[in-house]
Image 1 (cartoon, rainbow, N blue to C red):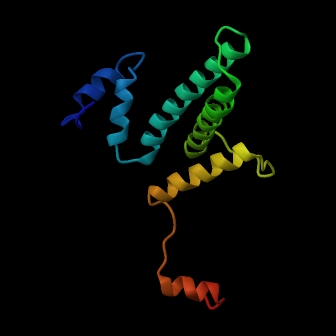
Image 2 (image 1 turned 30 degrees about the vertical axis):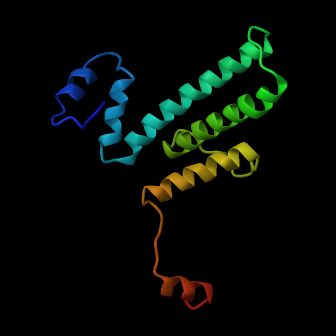
Length: 140
């Protein structure tokens, strides 16, 4: 997708099918509600996590060979990052709510990434420096 469609004819055409193409998801990033962008990113994260799991399975079953340093330095971080992104976008899509008492590293990373994305989308609270100083000093 190189440009935003001027009309939603293409969207309407593809929405009439029983399935949509992966390229169609790119149109979601142009829609104003952040949930559409979250959905597209969630699908991307899911595909990356699928690839990480498949690659790991191939290595574990001996169908593919990776040296121990590559497993430690590349495969494990790829697994962790893809799972973190998948979890973060699941949180943003409101399809998964982590247990409040689960403070594992991966869950915390997913929560932090979700919170960061929310702040980047201007969904956070902003205040003036004066208001912040009053709050810190207990005056308001």
